[in-house]
Length: 412
Image: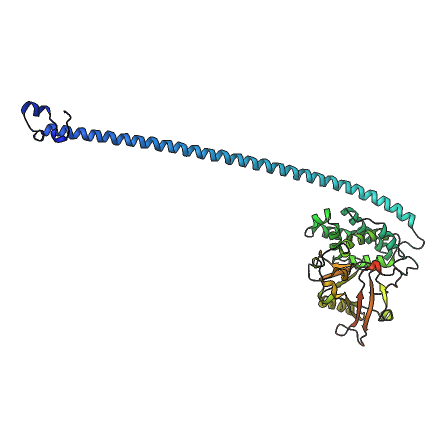
C-alpha cells in the first residue's frame, strides 16, 4: 500500500491498474485491516511482554526483600541464641559457685562444731549436764547476754542449722530424752525449712527469714514432752545454761535482725497494730499472780509472742485453761504515737513476715529480755475461757535504755 494523508486516500495496485476506488477493492481492504490488526496485536504483545518483564522484576525485588528480611531475622535469632547461651553459661557458673560455697559452708560447719565443742568444754560449769545456771537474777548477769554480744550476724544457713540442732539436743539432754528423738525432730524442722515458699532464697541469703520461719513451726518433738521449737528455745533461754547459750544466742541473733528495728528510717514502712494494742493469751499459775502488780517493771527471759488479733489470744488462753491453768489475757500496749512517729516506735518488736501459719496469727514478736511495766490487773474469781484474768502491760520503747538488773518475769 502507498501511505498517504488518510486511509480514504490510500491507493492499492488494483486501483492504480484498473482505476477502481479503494473502497471498491475488498481484497485490498481486507489486507489493510489485517495489517492494522497485526500491528495492534504486535503492540499488545509488546505491552504484555513489558508488563511481564516488569512483573518479573518486581517479583525478583520482592524475593530479594524477603531474603533480606530472612537474613536479618536469622542474624537476630543467632544474636538472641548467643545471648541466651551467654546467660546459661553465667547461670551455670553461678550454680557452680553456689555449689562451691555450699561445700565450703559444710566444711565451716564441721570446723565450727569442733570449735564450739572446745569452747563449751572450756566454759563448762559444775553440776549435772544441761542444768540451769545458778543465781540467774537479771539480764545483765545472764549467759545469754554474754554470748549474744560475742555473736556476729548469721551469714550462712549451716550456722543456723547447727544452732537449731544443738538447741534441740541440749533440751533432750536436760530433759532426759533420747538424742535420736531430738535428731528426728531436727530432721523434720530442716525438711520443713527447705520445703517452705522462698526457702532457697531465704537459706542462701536471707537467714533471718529462715530463722523466723523455724520459730513459727507448729511441728512437735516426739517423746514424753512434746513441744514446739519455740517452746524449747524459750526454755533454753530461761535455763541460761552456758553450754547451750552459744547456740541459743546464734539463733536469737538471726531472728532479732527482723525483731529489732532501730535501723529503720520510715515508720510507715513498718506494721503497727491498731491503737498500739497487742494481745497474748495463756495460763498464769496462782503462785505467780503476786509478781504482776501495777507499777512493776521487769524483763521477760525469752522471746515474747503477741498478736494484733484478740481472737488468736483467745485460742491460746483457751488451750491453757483446757490444760488446767487459770486463763489470762495479756494486753501489751505500745505507744500509739508510734503509728506515725518513729521515735515513739518500740525498737525491739516487729511483725513476723515469714510464718508457717501465713498471716492468720498476725504475730508480733518481742526480742528476748524485752522490758515491760505492769499498768493494770483485773483478777477473775473464775479465770476460765469466758472470764480470764486480764493484765495490761506497757512495752518499753527501747530495751537498751532500760536497766539491765530489772527483775525477771517468773511466768509469761
